[in-house]
Image (cartoon, rainbow, N blue to C red; front, side, top):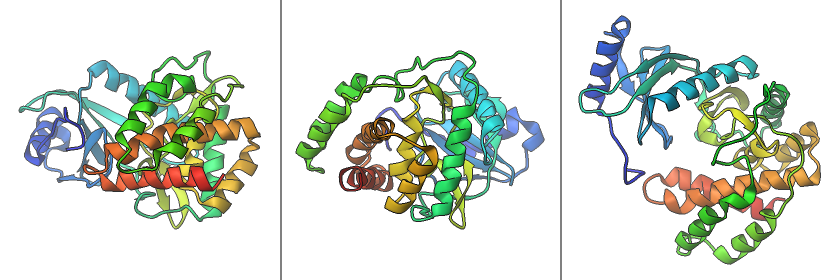
Length: 292
């Protein structure tokens, strides 16, 4: 288990819930997808659909909001993304609401690393430009996750430093954060995916073909989606992404700050429960330290 409060859904329960609540899909094969996600258990329904069962407490209103964000993201994304098609209810011992989306083909970037592909960097730049150009409809960042004030993440980052003593050289990382957290903000909020990590990006032959988990799509710091530069790209393609997005020094450094705030929590938290995700965080931190 990745979380102490994790809720599990067995394959037979998933199949029963799908068949009972969505009879039109009864009889289609239901199979668990081995994925690195930390939020949902994923089950394919036939060839074209996927059920997402939350691993931790989730409210129906939250899933409704996420579905709306997915639909809005799909309208502006330059590549394919899942479209919500149904919302399920608790049952058979599984206590949470759950959702059904369309299936988007492609290999996860966590499995087929596109980090040295300049073409992928160009695709990523096109996506981020399209998101930034989308209408915020007057909305501003109001959440508690990444995308607002860097300094509000101090308590979490300090917790991560304490928990990471056995797995990371914390002193230089703490010094880095001390600088990054002070970076001033400039620029109005723009629409952002908010979580462009390898497990949410689909590739084919080194090119971007899809983006998953857009439930957090919304207004945020323009630098937020730049986390992809360090999560997904090697040095050369990273420079190409920066060139195409015309990032100035401040925006680029704030992108480093958001990537740091995310990566520092991955290494220690998932070191035993999800080693690949922990290693992803370690790789991102290494790039942040050595490949500015």
